[in-house]
Length: 110
Image (cartoon, rainbow, N blue to C red; front, side, top):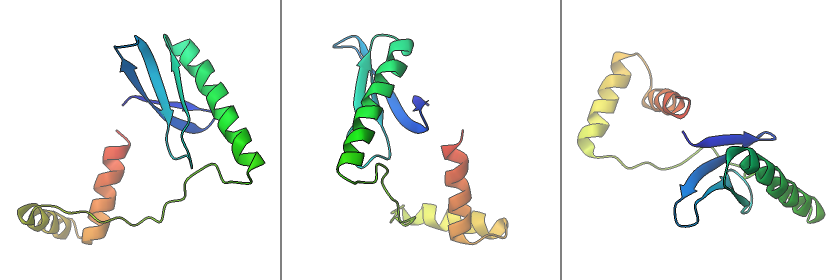
């Protein structure tokens, strides 16, 4: 995955061939904070600066910097996949919810 952690905050990293630079964008923030650099060392440096500016702005505005998630979201899948997931969960002795949570956890931590 193209993830970088800076001071405990995760950022997704992509290369922009038009400007020949890497672009980082912090995830899970209550606003936007991105940064650019031509190499990894400077990307980390610029990311730290961008994050500090964002956190300072949050402090001045008395805002929480991180988004809060409810832990709930809707998911639509084809009916045949739904049936297959129910079968797989039952075969493992799990509820549908627990089976999906486990599958998502495994996928997110590859």
